[in-house]
Image (cartoon, rainbow, N blue to C red; front, side, top):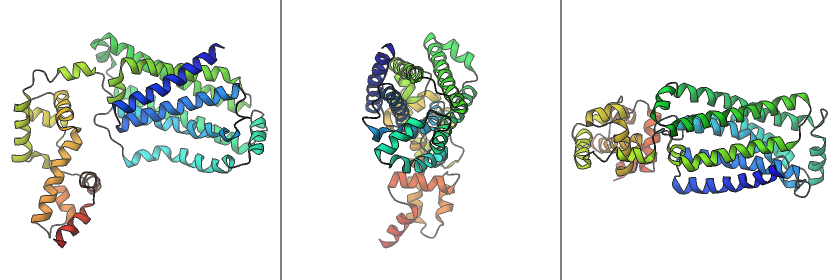
Length: 363
């Protein structure tokens, strides 16, 4: 009875949390967090459906839990990766994390398309050691995939926050956040290990303990999210109020004038080594102050801000030097690779550099 109540509360909390996150932000990080919470909530619901024997009434749901389980690990790892990085956006290489997930989902399709009576029969034999081998293999891969990425997330989290003593000295709120994150990640890892050894042994505990653990994780994330929403969305260990206060003593007009001089007159964005720390030092403000200023005033992160100047300069050079190679223009405006230039050019202009040049020639 208690597990049922907690499960219902966790499901409601997950829905409210996803809505809150997406209303506040639609960045890569917030989308990852929303998908992770949704996957956890669905697994929680699936386990609840098993205990109530709902799956025999709705057999189309059978085995769909594997789709969400195999993606939890990659989603969790990528979220942690973005949370401990500055100005992190989606990258093509992130898709590598989903290779096994995609493989399992594609291989699972024939099972999902089976007639209802066959799916029910397979599900009944699943707990036995002689159960349907491919199905057991899919579940095992899902658990192993989750454990691998949880381990990588653990490593990345502690590697990036290795100066944890500094964090502890800042405020009690940060202590609560760090300790809570460690506890939730540990519970998550233990649950995955328990599931893995359970699978290898060919025996299956009742689903209530797993249901209870998933519910606790979801509720834990929910309550942390209510207290530290800004941290969840933007990955900063500094509160939003404190971060905004950093701009109170900054002369915004003077800062904007400096930035215009640096970017438009001195064209320092053409230096491929230009980064947030370097620009903030030249502008005479702190890195957090400059980052917040660019976000608040220009509605962009540092990479987007500086790339906009680089792309505008590249467009000017294409007009004035029609014979110049695009790749040479890319390097001359500050990009250190042609792929980075192409990606930024298309994102800002909506077309490729080659197409833009062709349009220039036609004029």
